Length: 87
Image 1 (cartoon, rainbow, N blue to C red):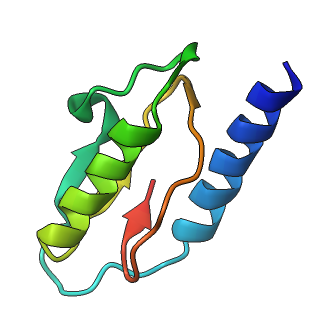
Image 2: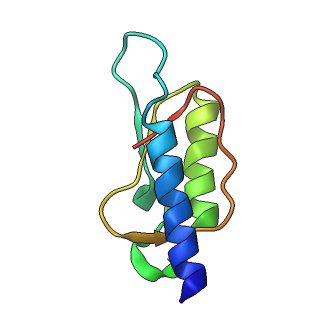
């Protein structure tokens, strides 16, 4: 139980830190919704790979917003990329 709370808290901190990062350019930012990469917000499933794939795709396409919709998404270590926004 403690591990799940710690991971959820870590993801919440990452979301808070990244929402303050600017998205470069004046065009509308492309959204990468983690559930479209297979993430499941059931509070049980590990979504580390799915979230990382969304971040990597965002980086590969030179920007956008990685969206974490409502739910309890469990994840381990996530490696962030410079200039990307997690929302």
